[in-house]
Each structure stands twice: as C-alpha cells, then as structure tokens.
Length: 185
Image (cartoon, rainbow, N blue to C red; front, side, top):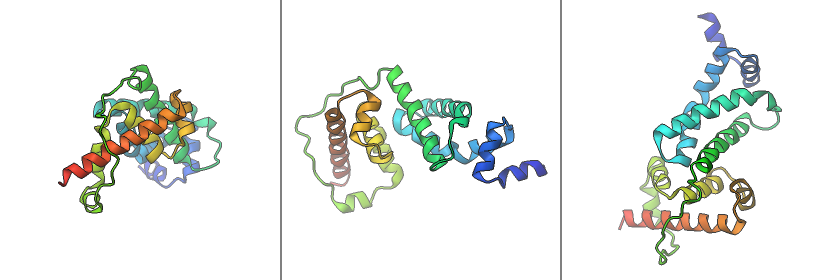
C-alpha cells in the first residue's frame, strides 16, 4: 500500500521515467491523471463516445510505446496531446471521414451571436454544438480553435489546401454562430 501511495507523490519527470521502465503503477497513475482530458479530446474529433474511448486507449498505447522519444523539452501534456490528436486523425482518415462532403446551405450568413446567447451556454453545451458539426468542419475547427494549429499546419496534417482549411473553419464558425443565435431567438 505504501508503494502505491508513493506513486502519487512522484514528480512528472519521475512518473515518466517510471513509465519508460515499464512500472505498471506509474503507467496507471499517468493514465489516471490524463484519461478524462484525453477522452474529451478524442470525443471532440470523432463525436462518438465509444469510439472516443477506443481512441483514448489506442493513444495511451502509443504514448507508452513512444514515451522514450519525449525529450523533456516543453510541456509534457502538449507533447502527449499531439499523440492523441494524431490518433484521432488517423482514425478519421482510415474511415474516410475527412473526405465526406456535407451539404451546407448557401445562404449561411456569418453573424456574431448576441453576447447574451453565448453567456447562457455552458462549456458542455458549446462542446455538444461542436460535436454536431460535420466531421471535416469539426476536425478543422478543433485543430485551429482549440489545439492552436495554424491553417498551414492543418493543411499539412490533413493533406488539404490551406484555403480549404480556412474555408472549413469559416463554415464551421458560421454554423456554430447560427445555431447559437437560433437557440435563443
């Protein structure tokens, strides 16, 4: 019991070293620390809870397999998030979800929702609206607005034109703005 308690008092560096050595308690602790956040990240990309859990588990397998390549430079969680984003994107590519086209009404106007409409929404409600976006739009929106990638980086990651990334982001934003505004009309 004392050994388990000690696992919880490890620094991030010690925890990573333990995982690299194959220490199951350290791996479990790392999993416990980050599983919820990584599941939420995966959910943002796939929009399906069961698939998100599978992707999260796949991401942890990749994480533990490639942990030795973490240089210790920069934030560990940022390095880890890239693994999970790439895992989700691999899934979307494999299932051709990024190639799906979605009909969008030509008359969607980009408008700013009233500040009071946004103020009435919780973070969970906003995330639910993002999850309802078509896969391609949701993916670009997540990469740009949430993960902080540039449109050039997104174009490279998704193997699309930079203008396509910008267009999909703009359309995703327009859809979200319309839906938020319509919620409170």
